[in-house]
Amino acid sequence: MPSFETSDHVSTRSVLRHRPIGTRPVPTGKHSVVTRATAPVVQRASRPRPADATDDVWHQGDEIAADERETYPPVHTQPGNKRALMVTSTGMPQTPRPRTGQIKREAPVVRRHAHPLLYLGVGMLGMLVLWMLLSAALGWFNTTLDDFRYGRPRTFQTDYFVGHNEQNGVKSHFIALNLNGHIEIIEFPGGDATHAHIYLGPQLYGANNDLVPVILKFADLNDDQKPDMIVTFQGSRTVFINDQGMFRALQPGERQEVEQALQHLGQ
Image 1 (tube, helix red, strand yellow):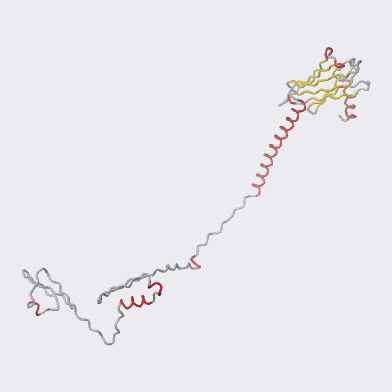
Image 2 (cartoon, helix red, strand yellow):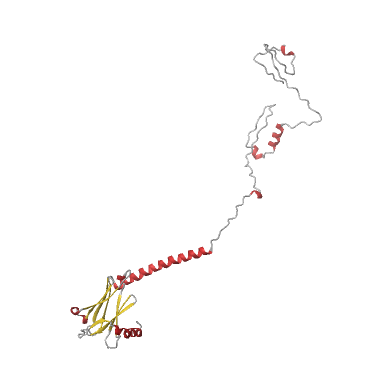
């Protein structure tokens, strides 16, 4: 049934006896009724009738699975309402799989090799550091060992028959002392401290010269049947000749004979 759009004034039924199809201009100052009528659409026999939107929705609803239909309550539509029904599926959306050509491939990482001289330099530096550490550790070990053996100041003691006031059969007592880098030897003839003799040795120089131990040995170096005193320190040797009940320094004329005797003894 056609609908009418009217203004605020509603005309009587007799006025609407003749209803025009088109739209004409309204004279000024007069209230008229403007009506719009929809011309009926004539279906052509040769053209097929297009499918209604409701038919598409209905067929789409028929394709829904039976278990999904039970989750939705029935929807009642009024006749003549041709709005399309929105059907929502409860199934999970299918995510499109990426194509093989669309996979992003990372660029290959190019590893740069260092120059061989760099490895050589690092190795030499490591060996130098290792040598310094080993040297420091070895020096500390030797110093600690000398502390246990000779104490501080470095002191060496021994007893030996040298023929000095030993009539009672007691050996003479000798003490070799490194006092602040200066070597001193103290003799107690026959163990008698009242007749002690002090012999001054060389002065030592250099770092930690006061930590150098002094060792005494006795051997006959000039074939006089008397043991002479050999003072050994820091790889060096000093000889004192046994003469007239005590020891004296080596004279220049005796040096060659004493050196040959030391080589023979392996000193």
